[in-house]
Length: 311
Image (cartoon, rainbow, N blue to C red; front, side, top):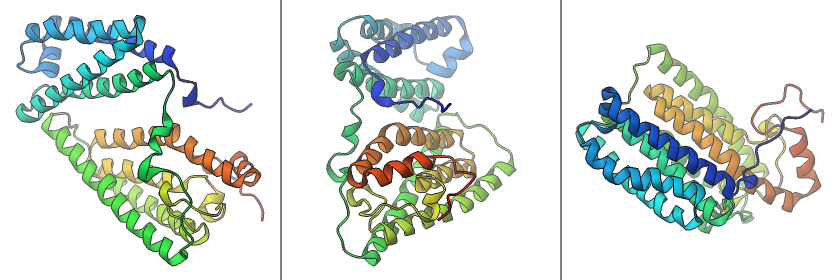
């Protein structure tokens, strides 16, 4: 019996209300610990006046989350902006003072959750199609030849590596240290990171080269492959570039000794799998029909098959 797959399209307003209910409870429990456990108050609020913040935050954050859980949908328009505003203030405070880093991190998580749940509560669905707008709209690449696609793919990879695998992780590492969230790691962790990056990079490069030369397209949806590619690394796993990219992201975190960068890479994997992949595969099914369905049903998305098909 096959395992049941998580389908983001099944998330509706009910789940958003559950989230806000849990957030209200978590917020209430946090405020109780703030006033009863000094180390938690210091770690999450630093030198800020807890009583002064509580007067405003408990009605708006805890009360607003409770209202969103059981009240009208428009309440999401209150709780989400307020959470983002508090998060911005906490992030600035933690960065300037190096205090309350854990509080800032918790508020970042709350902001992401509140905005996402607020959108679902208002629309009664997950608007995954918003991702594929403007320059990210899925459309087949122009028939300009394999060399042109290879050059475009190489440029895309350079930008991907520079921004997502180094600049963003370095920024996260800086925040992690500034907010005093860094955790010491042994030297072998950095070595494992280098090995993982070196192992994952050729897979990504190979996959991109096959996509450009045989699929006549690039990794970006704005210039998607014109032909269905099911050879090379695609015979083993459906999304080898994504597998390699996530592996390199985790490797960057290990190299930098940053648990937040590792978390960033894993969060990227979930976002890609739940929000991006369904749209891309729907486009492939529409354009290639039964050949893609057979391929999708016989090759795993993330984990390589142990046995390859003949031919």
